[in-house]
Image (cartoon, chains in turn green, blue):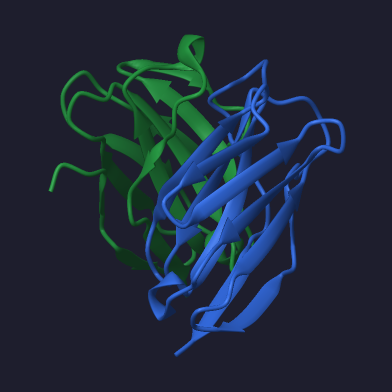
Length: 117
Length: 112
């Protein structure tokens, strides 16, 4: 399966712990996007990354949240000192090309469902 | 702010019937896309319609776009139980084409 791979599928953390969510884009894709989905709602954009670069993190909370997409390995969304309000499904998407080439779909993974106790 | 809003929020139909979902948005767009989400899964891209297109077909799907009214509709013909899912429209803004803006979705139930 050459689709977008996210792990873990489910993650349970206690308040104050750290959560690390991983995303491996589709083969040949160098652009990664993270979204958050609350129950019964649509996805909300968080951050857009290319290899080793954060292009736009305007949708990500300034505190506690960070994202990276290293030269080697998956993209990581990191949430420090989690709180109950961080409980949500986090989706990663990828595309082969970026903003200069609009009108192309993003390919989504199955998400990580984060639950905060 | 949320741009796409779907209508209705929920729809229940009998297998074989057609399902129509509507999406409204607020600002200019490059394109509008429709995605399907099965319970507990990620989004699957269905169809993309560009701002200069008015209608597009893909199998049993028909999408229309009216940029003057800032609205789109998704028609699923001859529905099947397997079409049961949530359907989201997403708009791609011209100034930040990567930043898809999703509506809150229509939950479709197709009864066998």
